[in-house]
Image (cartoon, rainbow, N blue to C red; front, side, top):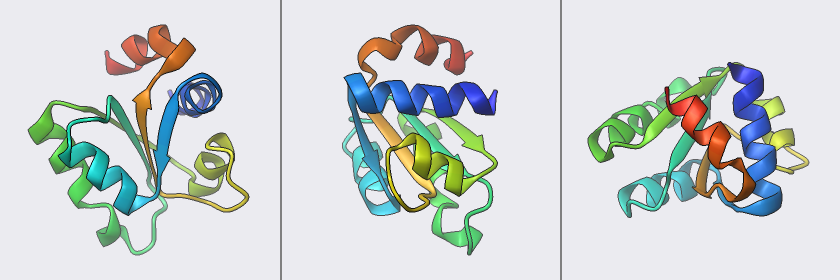
Length: 102
């Protein structure tokens, strides 16, 4: 399932729109613009992302966790790691979003 999440971020980055980082992701969720949110399990300290699953549940947004912040950063096209990514426009990844939401 993690590989599908990384692939989804890569496709959305190329053909859609994503936001990276805890602050940008939190704003996207609060404004109701995020369609899918992906966070890294190895975030340190864990407290920086603890609010994200609760916000997603409250807003009805799909949330998934992946094991590695480094791999999430690479999938998002960043030279550094990131602990949170929000997909605002899935672009060509509409099918993958539906599959991940199951």
